[in-house]
Length: 48
Image (cartoon, rainbow, N blue to C red; front, side, top):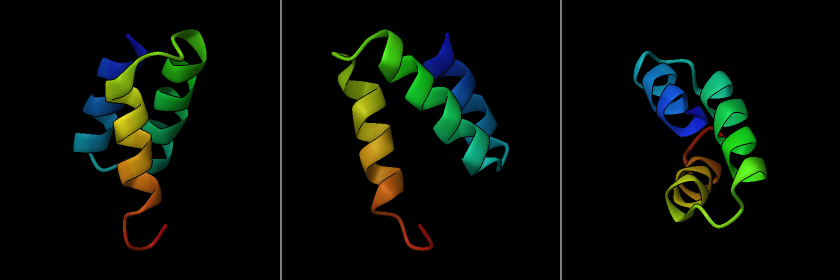
């Protein structure tokens, strides 16, 4: 749920909230590679 909600708010332009939601998703499921990839991409994105 946190992954999907994070994706939605990211698409809506709220990167900070998306990061919070993805971090929560990873906390609940540390093995989720999709969430881990999203977070890695965001941390390497310009302006971060």
